[in-house]
Image (tube, rainbow, N blue to C red; front, side):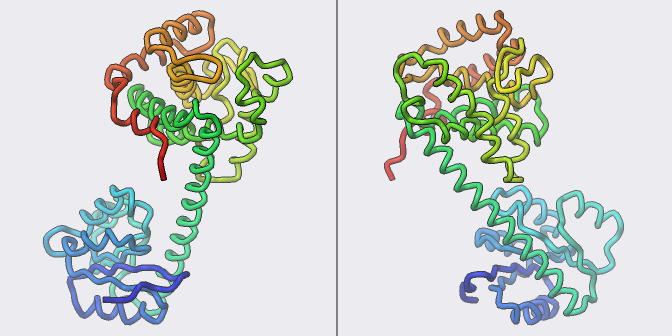
Length: 337
């Protein structure tokens, strides 16, 4: 068993049923200092994927489960979906290559291959994977910070996570495409991120806010956008962060957008945000029941504030998400460690 590589090096999984070719690839990669895992079949490789490889070299032609099937498995697993995969091909047909491209292959390496070509492709894709990992690590820090912002007030613990859950289910129900659905889910997590710039004296005030204090609160969508906009992985969620306080009649903020000009991801998140705010206790009032909250939201639809069609769809979401649902309970229970 290979030892764990030092920092700056990665793990490479080589999957090929030809022991000679597999051995050649291993000998060519070992001088690079990476940890090398070997599998002679897709079935054997399955367990090794749990080790979290940084690169997979995968033979297209394998006995039993094919290389295409293993590639699909890699892409469907959240743990490995971003791992680059080089598919090793012999006399592959155009159709087989096209099938691999559609399944998410990163690159091809044709047999016979030169040592220089193998090393160059592996080096480039490993560097790309390390950059991706760094971005994901940075995003996890931001997620933790967003949770910390919620936790400034014991009444809002778990608010952003619940908004993400509600909005994601609502987005699925109305048929949002995958990119928009991801924007809704991430936007829900980060929609109040700008409140990091709001003073505790204002954010936690139990009495009515003064005009100047309310103006400070109203800056949080712009503050959130400015703080997060340089993170490219969060770019699709910026419409939610910036526009979740717009109203259908144009009376919202920060830009006073109206109707369909408000991005659909923001309109979906607004419904989730308002509902969660009403149904949870706040420093200035107790929690309202679901029915009381929905009555208020229906009245606000009549005022022209929210998208009534989306609120109608939200009722269907609530029918599948009872108040004692385990997902809601977990998101509302503070961690003890």
